[in-house]
Image 1: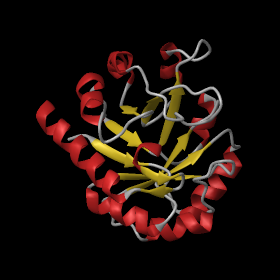
Image 2: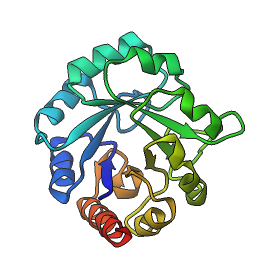
Image 3: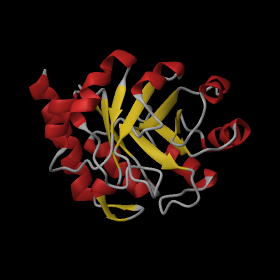
Image 4: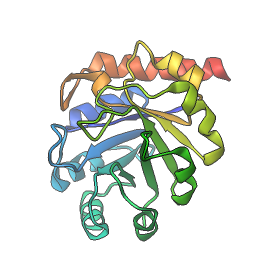
Length: 208
């Protein structure tokens, strides 16, 4: 069954709703310009509230290996997501499983993906002004052609209304949602979180 990641969690209450809805992963953003930024101390409190079945992912943008190690250790996250222009070598330097984000532009092409020794690739829509999909959809048909490279996490522009279609077309290992289930940036709409997870799981069952 498909896995669901609810990203941009900023409170224990939002994390609890995501967990109760059935999400297997939550994302904690350590990128200060983001309205969803959390400190390592805030993140640690959230991580400690999670059951053993749910993993926390620390999201970083163009940080050094030393900074990532320090924050990931302090917060207690289980995986690290690199969301900028990080190198394959940086991935090799980290002792956590790594998710590497790719936004396909003229500079970033699928042929680069095998260079990265990672647990999964997160594919999202491209928005030139922000790190993160910015609500821009990925090309789901193109994402469907990437499975030979490894585990694919689909992100970018996903909502409760379109996640089932996205899964049917892209057939990802997991789906990742942030702004599509928010009331305001940094605060989740709990009904949308529940609907997103339920519909993603339903689409997964239908696929099987």
